[in-house]
Length: 163
Image 1 (tube, rainbow, N blue to C red):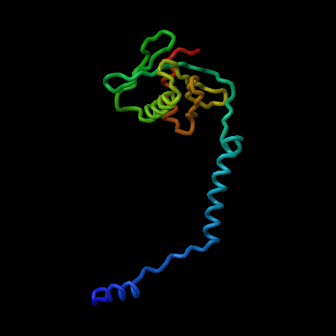
Image 2: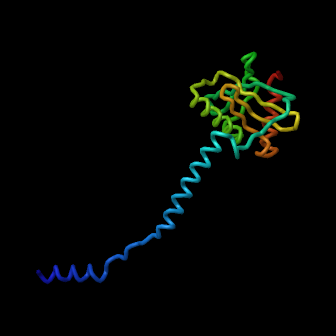
Image 3: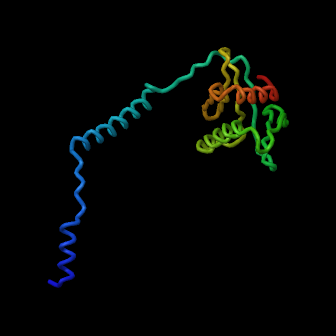
């Protein structure tokens, strides 16, 4: 054995990394927690237990509107009955409105539904408001997002034709 090899062996013996030992009880507990989480999420998903359900009273006002992108980055608000542009959301403004509409459009893409069907904005007897997509069944309750955002959808309702 050469002197260099001897130094390497001596270094390895005295400077080895200590083995990390994880207690079996901790591993079993972590595994049990993961299994419990997956089972609980599955049960909740299949049975609806633990899911938030919002049951609205009867709708007192419903307005159907379509939204179309404009070349300038704005959004045209279109009456689905007449096909007329009843309003415009200017480019760069109304971040909340744009985010909600983008989210709804993405959901339609996932379901292979085009931009043709109208969305509905509903005012409920209990005072709540929602944006609904009848083609996907998705509903966004607008109340939790604050009065300013709710007011913007109220303005959109006034642009449309009440059904």
